[in-house]
Length: 519
Image (cartoon, rainbow, N blue to C red; front, side, top):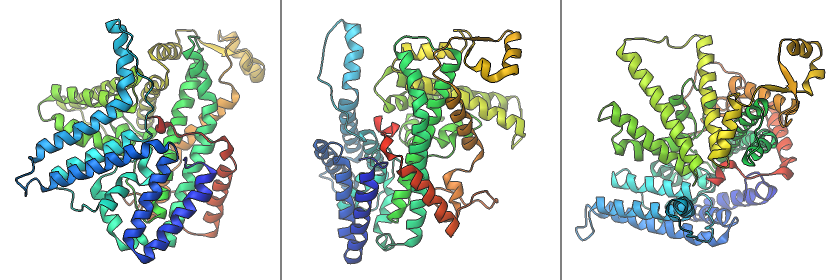
């Protein structure tokens, strides 16, 4: 079931909200169980066959968590560390079987000259997210951070439908106090109005902006997948449209997840914070998929040694972390290469900071406006190049796109632009600019989508800045600066949000899955 569907908005969500708050008046345990069952239905609506897999994973991890918690008190139970290793290994093996079996076999066959074949294994929706969520729970239990072991609450913690399919990756300690709080089970008008506002902003981003850009991104990448060489304009246009599509798609999902959860009185952690405004790649990863970055840092990079053993090991750990982070996103060499590109970018970024400090070079803080703008633009271009590899069907089609973007296929403007530009077009032609036949995949409509989207991304406040007075997410800090478009309850804001929601809803006939559902 998709958030951007009529069935979800007009049937599922109202029924779940009604049942949750009505049962909450009777018994909080019943209300939590209702929400957990509703979340299982939400998951099973896609494919009922995998409900058993999800429940088995939840039950096994809950049991292991209980054993780990009790192992220090009961000498008959094996040591904590051994239990933790077994439990994590079981989770990773499950993930590897469903997500990577076909990938590894197809990669080995050409090397070994074999023809091994396993029928396509259907990837369970959200398996990466609920696996990482439970690994974090096991590690937190091992470290003594888990204080509550109510099974219904744990079931709800893992299956909670706003985050189950595409994150955020949750920590047990963030959610359990909220599920145990009596106020969570009482209907609250402020929570509902704040939640609906954030949900409709996210729905608009997904349905209007992300899906609108997808129309232009898809044909360019499809063309390169067939081996056809796109032109400079088409390649850059397709790359920019996909980068912007992915931005609004994931930003929209993150907003919708936070908004939905807020309707139930539960605040989720922030998962997206204007990453295209970042001045370097380090900052980008602090703002893009923030809970995944947190997970990779706390449960992979730091256990590997982090920066404790010198610069070389720090860079090695960074690269390993990003390679595995890339592989987490998908079973394909393009994802591994994308992880390697970001790993290399992080190493260069950290290396520059280390070199600068060794020479005593102090940069102004904050940067001047021109330097800040240049830093944002450079970081954005690096990220766009990475997204080309991420989106491409295979390495060959990624190379075709990057070759075109670098100008190796020549620089030709569409001949259709020459008459439209009039005297300016004739002047450019006289200066040697070539107008000629192109694939014409990126024309005026796409150009307008690109520059309007960039204006929104770089100059408009993001959702949490608009909603800052109502603490929309767990880790959003208050900001005393005066900002534009601050939300507050009024007839005008209600009308504006209703209009945004209406525009999005009447376009749901063009619904599409969220991009992160694939990972």
